[in-house]
Image (cartoon, rainbow, N blue to C red; front, top):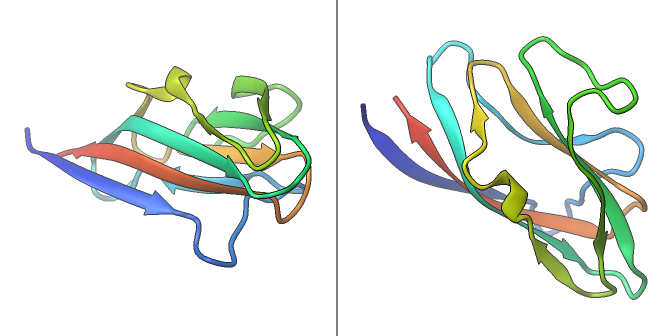
Length: 118
């Protein structure tokens, strides 16, 4: 088994959505790789506090209510950040995805570090 360290982040003008959960990462169905989250940092660039919901959605699943929710109402202080330690070690298998929903638009950005096992 090979481990490869990887990272992804929101771009300069990209934010976590407040209407539809933003997909941060999806484990590839065709590659048969397992993703192990090592670190997720959420950053609030707004002058008011914001809350976020985090979901780990199984392959083929969709969010309905609290289905798949792994972190509920995480508060990000005004112009603050949070290292979401609850996700360290979380696995995404073929087709699973990690999604985040913010309480307001154009406020929350992310940086996600993970290991890909193949």
